Length: 570
Ligand SMILES: Cc1cc2nc3c(=O)[nH]c(=O)nc-3n(C[C@H](O)[C@H](O)[C@H](O)COP(=O)(O)OP(=O)(O)OC[C@H]3O[C@@H](n4cnc5c(N)ncnc54)[C@H](O)[C@@H]3O)c2cc1C
Image (cartoon, rainbow, N blue to C red; front, side, top):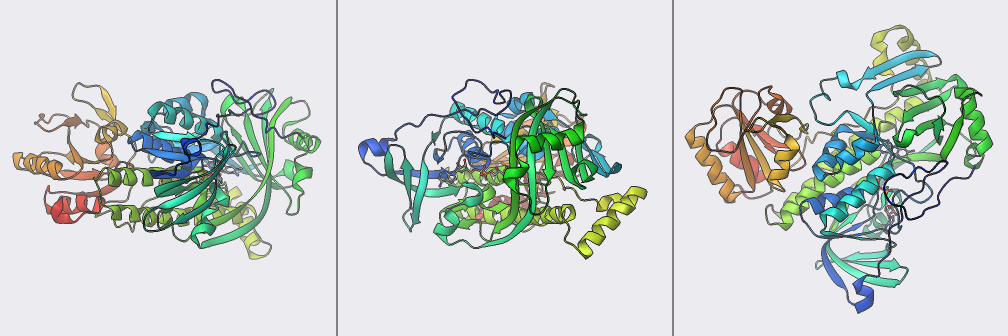
């Protein structure tokens, strides 16, 4: 089977070319450092232009913060593994909306909400996310399926539109050191080597991060023995637009199978292989076709777009920050693909760190705020490793008690609804809560959905628009009646701290002088998890920093915590 890794420069976004993906190529431009023999100094250097690094670059560009991104490759996707992530969660889609590329993703991707799980021919679990209140208030759908390289391509396009960030392709970081003054990176390019200095370095080099060794990072890891083989295909007669999962597929020797639709009418069919399967053999075209025919029948015409065998492991770095280096995405943690927690949480890593760096660089927050990146995203990483490891063990149980439990769970689920909760083919990625962050106060640590409200002229607005207006500052939403004294305090707070305040009025409340919007259905208030007369302090990453009732010292303390400042100075 010829796995398509061929690349060429292409206009537009149609990367699926008949049988194969043809990814775009970006030009290598000789950097001024080589031409002038200088060592330049930058506030932020991002190493790695995958999903996490490009999201980081786009978010910094969105806040108007300059940065340089270095990638060893000259294309999106990872060479030889063009097709990886497919499933993007509501939280990621909300972030992409804030960054200005959601519409492109929605136009190319596939929306889905129904999932069904089978054991043999029995349906043992199903869900419809659009019916779940946790999902249906956002302006973005529960999920969109799209090939990861499309999102990366849109990110490149958006970064170029926004400016501020230099994208340097064919630039491999080959050495690194840091001291009290700065970090120094050696960059290998087709035109020769050069050095670049930085105040902050973002390691987004993925699962094989060289920075872990350079900074002496310790990693907690577990190697898996599960083997899979992807077939991205097009059909003459295609199945329903639902996620179908088989735990024991009769057409795959009773092993697991996944079936999803992605962009360009391409289906991802992912087959679990035997423990000692040879990757070269299972990805041979005749073997892949034979497998597909067993599932879809000999009469179904199938066009194979891409084939990729893979194994996975689980890993979590013990510290997400080492001096000037911040680890994001797979460089920080690696999880099995079940539940779509890899790429999606890398997007959230970037979103979390970007606003903090922006706020610190603009003098809106103290440098200590950057320490909360580890507290928050390490909690998320550990949680995601835990959840995905459980799924991996359900899908590939060890002989003995694990298999006995798995078989018992399936047997019960076939007969009783209560047992369906034990069927674990992947707990879909969520916006992880932060329960022990030094930057969150009482009521804080929850993500807020991108719900809608009404602007004063009656037109519809979204929380993301308010966050955009607030920029890298905190957004304070004040619900219910407010006294003139209350307004006075908010104005005074706005003069000393990076906070923009909005009074959220109920259906009939008169507008006062403060910026205001209307929330007739209470969606904004519900999304902030507060009731009655209350306030919610929202961070630029759409997480609640704190919530409370009186516009008093509690609020001032919460603002101080959220920007890691001394309370008095706020
Ligand atoms: C089969 C499969 C299915 C998956 N499905 C999903 C899914 O549905 N949803 C989801 O969210 N996730 C999914 N994932 C996980 C997702 O693909 C990864 O989590 C994601 O790609 C990680 O992004 P990253 O930017 O951290 O790293 P990568 O995408 O690996 O990017 C790293 C980048 O760093 C560059 N680089 C490396 N070393 C250097 C260096 N020394 N100098 C300069 N540049 C360097 C590389 O060229 C690359 O561009 C899946 C993974 C697999 C394997």
